[in-house]
Amino acid sequence: MQCSWKAVILLALASIAIQYTAIRTFTSKTFHLCPMPSPQNCGLAAQDTDPSFERGCEEYPYFIYNASRKTHILVLATTRSGSSFVGQLLNQHSDVFYLFEPLYHVQTALIPRLSHSRNAADRRVMLGASRDLLRSLYGCDLHFLESYIKPPPANHTTDKLFRRGASRALCSQPVCDAFGPGDTNVEEGDCVKKCASVNMTLAAEACRERRHMAIKIVRVPEIGDLRALVEDPRLNLKVIQLVRDPRGILSSRIETFRDTYRLWRIWRATGRKPYNLDLTQLTMVCDDFLSSVSTGLSHPYWLKGKYMLVRYEDLARSPLQKTKEIYDYLGLPMDKNVVDWIQANTRGSNELLAKHKYGTVRDSAANAESWRLKLSIEMVDYTQTVCQKILNILGYKSVKTAEELKNMSLSLVQDKSFVPLS
Ligand SMILES: *[C@@H]1O[C@H](CO)[C@@H](O)[C@H](O)[C@H]1NC(C)=O
Ligand SMILES: *[C@@H]1O[C@H](CO)[C@@H](O)[C@H](O)[C@H]1NC(C)=O
Ligand SMILES: *[C@@H]1O[C@H](CO)[C@@H](O)[C@H](O)[C@H]1NC(C)=O
Ligand SMILES: *[C@@H]1O[C@H](CO)[C@@H](O)[C@H](O)[C@H]1NC(C)=O
Image 1 (cartoon, rainbow, N blue to C red):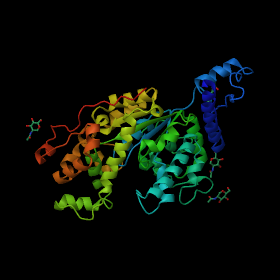
Image 2 (cartoon, rainbow, N blue to C red):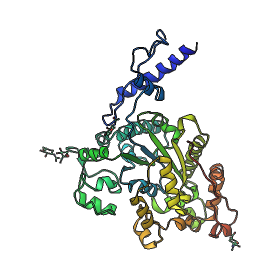
Image 3 (cartoon, protein in one colour):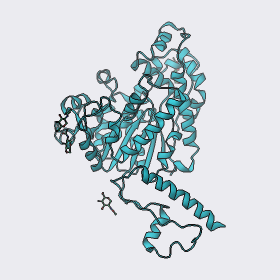
């Protein structure tokens, strides 16, 4: 009885494994299939196999891995939640190959009209394509991305790779010869100007040469959508879910996406909520956070050791300490470049801030809560009503009066630690 039960599980796992193998062959990693017992020869299966091989198979049910395999890092975020900042904390590490939101290309290719489609069918198509692309990218198959880039790259070369300048690896040798190894702090704009087009073949080589890979995405709603990737044994995926106070996200989007959030600006300026305001621009953030964070904090077995919840406000308040925690979770040593970058980029300077609308340079601590001076009490009140549940879970305090809202010596971020489950 017990034997056949085991055999069924093994067969199921093996068939999943074979499907994965059929879908894509990862050339950068070595693995092979373990012998597969069948119900007929249960108990005899291991007889004619090498004992060391068998031991490996017990540890990992169906693959044996190269012990020095890569850590694949995914930053799961939403726009204006501080994801560029977190991306930089990984990008600055000399062993990490970093990509800034490759799903931009999937979206512009598949759903060009809408920036964030709420159509369920569109969403499914987008998610399926996104997962396939991420899987390929983690295998350094950057050519797969080319099919989404417009216009299609000629001779595997393109100058349309989204936010290429945000990736150190794509602004240094061998991908770009414009800067020497001593140029550690290349500005995104300088990289785009001086490096010309990206040769995707060279970029893939650079990817294979780095020991780890990090990708930041803002176009996948929640962690449950990534389960197939998290469970893929060849990926060794570690997810960092970044959250931020939804009131801060709203305020930042109103400043940044001036067209899309125009009606919110009208509300702020006139004190009257426009009747045709698209409330889902706010509620979607809270709903997605709620389902994702609820899943993450319920500690399901498939996220064991693979999920860390980070509040942007905590990073802003103690960037070094929080970054250290992130690297501990990833199991990577934090290198000097990361420390230097934090020290150079978290000191306050409003001049710099003004220059970097999409950038990461900011007086982090003050800025994380500066939305309190920008939103009206009515907008805050509305947000607190529709987002009440997630605000509570994440430890963001509500305010009742305009005085409380503007009183910056009263922090709205409750101390709370979300320890990653190991
Ligand atoms: C694992 O891969 C690395 C890099 O490809 C290689 O140098 C190393 O020899 C491999 N180790 C084993 C045990 O196969
Ligand atoms: C692609 O490479 C071929 C051969 O080197 C060359 O003739 C062609 O002009 C290139 N195409 C573009 C668009 O650069
Ligand atoms: C891109 O890089 C590869 C690898 O070095 C090279 O063979 C190829 O010619 C390059 N393509 C172009 C268009 O320069
Ligand atoms: C602001 O908050 C602080 C800390 O709670 C409090 O001591 C102070 O009285 C408040 N100031 C105003 C003007 O409400």
